Image 1 (tube, rainbow, N blue to C red):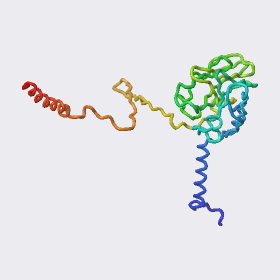
Image 2: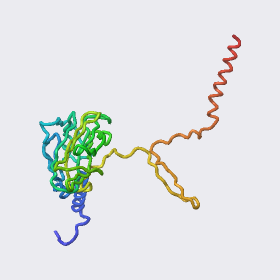
Image 3: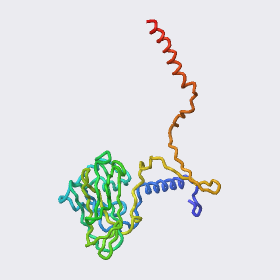
Length: 285
């Protein structure tokens, strides 16, 4: 074998290039790990399930509420979870729920910016308005209002709620509100009018929302409503706005004015022709 010459064009090199490309695509589609992300996580649990280390290196501990509050469920284990890589679907397949409000006390020692990551998936109900609840921090900050998982993403689909907050000088700042912080963050899932509150997994990340890996794209969350586009045009010295609507794909609606007027008169003539003989017969009787 000669050295020093490129092997471009040879079948062997072409096969290696194709294999590398396929591998790269698979890694991207399955959610590549974010370097050093696991080091930013200060607390993580797999609600209703056992310990699990995800593809980003986060170690989710076993649920600390096991045998204490609420009920654990693995009903979702029979279902594939969309938007989650196969290795981490277990984080959305197990859950803890309770017939009343329940929560987790999370110790946070250092000041700084944090993100609360709440993982959910609706694996039981098949329509909206069946399970709706709030999420509250430290008994007074409602950070997620009227959460309807099915309404958000549908059935057996991963959904993450990200809540940014800051801890400085003994104060908790979240969504424009401030309260006293005593070293523990109480995350509560508040009972609503529809069924029981629940959660699949929780983690606290030090940093901002941009530091949190995103779920895979949702195949069915595209907007189905018509979108209006505004085009500006100039009419002399006056600038006007023209509103346009996107045309949906599918068969065109027939133009009611395209038909000939003679076709509209035909049923009238037929009815008149039938009426005259009938009237004549009645007169003879």
